[in-house]
Picture (cartoon, rainbow, N blue to C red):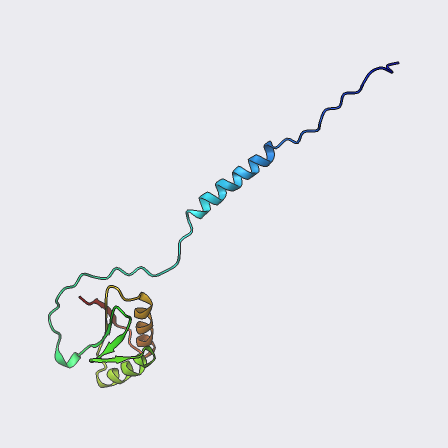
Length: 134
């Protein structure tokens, strides 16, 4: 009989290797997926300023100007974005072949251009051009 024998117990150890494997796999997954996330938006490359020959006077365009402060101007008067559609409908009734030209300042917000172009489309104009101011 082994009465005098002491029983030696070892402290239980937890193997952390599988947990570290999972942590590193998750880290790699998040790094890879984070690099592919893109913010949505509209990229607009504004054309360089050029001078075009004047068009025939009986086909006058409807020209909106957007300043760097995002103010909208039509025929020398400042207008609200809510009145763009009514102004386009009036001008289009006078001249059905008229096109809408939006002159935007390079520092103006793209959202203002989109609002004006949406209002023109709602008024029935499909030919909308973007021009830059200097």
